[in-house]
Length: 249
Figure 1 (cartoon, rainbow, N blue to C red):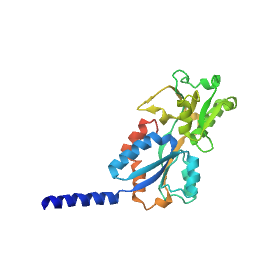
Figure 2 (cartoon, rainbow, N blue to C red):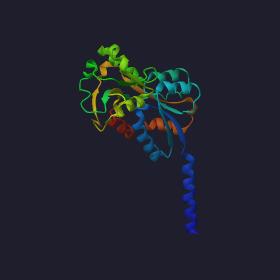
Figure 3 (tube, one colour):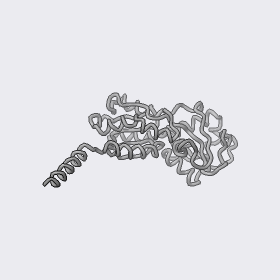
Figure 4 (cartoon, rainbow, N blue to C red):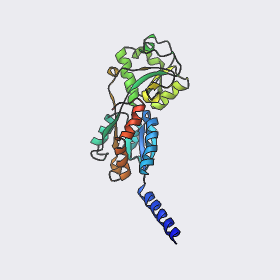
């Protein structure tokens, strides 16, 4: 009888935990793929809530959200898009915050292609230069701004290979379809070093700061799991993960 009672108690506990746990739909800027996958796994372990992640370009997510897409939390690659959503009353009040400041890098999958001062851009001795679509991806816009400030934009324009988002821009370089490209530092950096190939971390003064803001969307303003994820992104554990991918705060 005691064993039966104990078993019943365990089952009730499990049922209660299951009832409290929830699932949330999260739109995530493509540059933040690797850190967010890691954070979501820790978030689920620590809270029981499951974050279902979709990755893509910030501009495309904006269009989807304004057209009623079922996202509940949005991690953008800029601060302008979340601010726009706030003005349109599409976010839960007081939930917008900067979760990371991104960095742009010129990267080649091959060692020795990109020098540590980015002089390769002025030499132009390559056929293809990958970047994300500047109309929908903030890292693509930062790449254009960088090239204009360096005075190489017009000379290199014919060599551009545009990815729909920063993941695709990275893929073009990783597969050799472009010899080099502008990508997010987080895609080629881990624990204090570039993970492969050759790279030039673009100086911050060459482009506007990539302040990446997160918001809880209006439809989830009363959803504890969505609010919990927003808070979790501010936690020491999440920040430690974010930092290992080269982001600042």
